[in-house]
Amino acid sequence: MTAATLAEVLGPAMAGGYAVAGLVVLGWEDAVAYVEAAEETGIPVVLQAGPGSRAHTPVAVLGKMLRHLAEAASVPVVCHIDHARSLEECLEGIDNGFTSVMYDGSNLPIGQNIETTAGIVERARRAGVSVEGEVGFVGYAEGAPSATTSPEEAARFDRESGADALAVSVGNVHLQTQTTASIDFAALRAIEAVTALPLVLHGGSGIAPELRRTLARETRVSKFNIGTELRMAFGSALRKSLGDNPEAFDRIKLLAPVVPAVRAATAGVIRDLRHP
Image 1 (cartoon, rainbow, N blue to C red):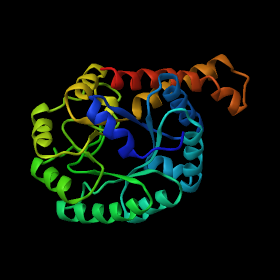
Image 2 (cartoon, rainbow, N blue to C red):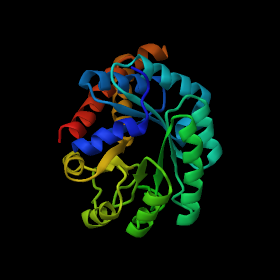
Image 3 (tube, rainbow, N blue to C red):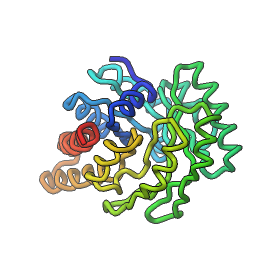
Image 4 (cartoon, helix red, strand yellow):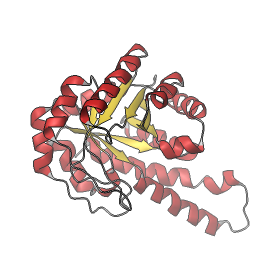
């Protein structure tokens, strides 16, 4: 199975009334666990290299690692750059084997956001790469507050940017460790009424599983970004491994039990989105 683009997995998801998981990758062990969970369930996934991941590991290394996993997988796997803030970051991803890039122009005036996104789309199309954009601002649990997506701006972005997916802000928040997000369904419906693109919710860990299932089934949300809850599963499994092996010092031995724990947590997440 070759690596897939975001458009190739979001189109069927939107048409079929389900969603796919965009899974935040920080290293080899979690990436392996995510792909094993995808193969266990037979459900496509999106492997996402965000700013933290890219600051820790060179994009050239991440691209080769994720493409290696994707091309050996038995299900479609998207290799995705998340929250790129410039054309250069997107092009670096495209040049290093990523099949999808997310340009985050949410801090820009809508006209500039659209213009920059459209330029990235033009370059990405030549390479057969998908583009996700963002309108509105998804805030952070311990940081900047959210700004709800304007339906008018979303409609204009949908018409003019050429993007394959649109991330929106409707109550979702990044980096929440509790499932306390309250989704504004009226705001989401207003966006759906004037757009046609698959919609994406960042901060999916803060949305309760039953609410994610409802959104996947009843709205055009076709991708949830999931990071925090899986990092929490990773941390819990690693702490147990350290406790169980107090004399161990080999990182391979210490990290080995983490992979099945993260795989199990991931399989639960992606099954929920496919079978709401």
